[in-house]
Image (cartoon, rainbow, N blue to C red; front, side, top):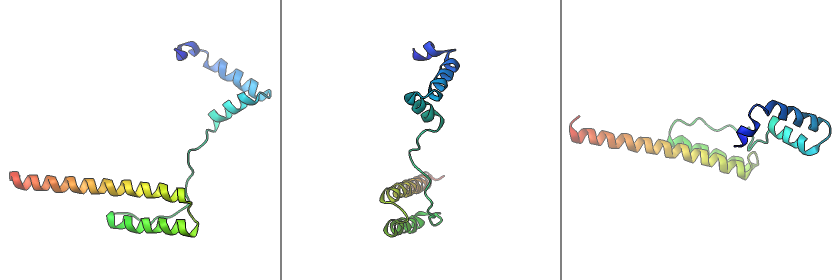
Length: 112
C-alpha cells in the first residue's frame, strides 16, 4: 500500500529530504546518511588464518584464533565469529564426507 502511495513520487520525496537535510533538519540528515552510508554490522578483520583444505587444518585455524584472542590481535567477539565460521566449514565437510561414504556403501550393496 505504501509503495502505491509513493509510486512516481520517490524522486520528489528524495529531493525534499535532501533539501530539508541540507537546510539543517537533523532528523532528515540522519535519514539521508543512513541511506547513503548505512551502518555496517561488522568490519573486516585483519587476521591471517592458515590455509584450510581439510578438517585437520580447522584444528590449526582454531589454534590460530585462540592465539589471536590471547595476544590481543583479535577481540573475543571476533574470535567467536571466526570460530563459528570454522565450525560451519567443519560441519559442511563432515556432512559431505558422510554422504559420500553412505553413497559408496549403498553402491557396493546394490552392486553398482
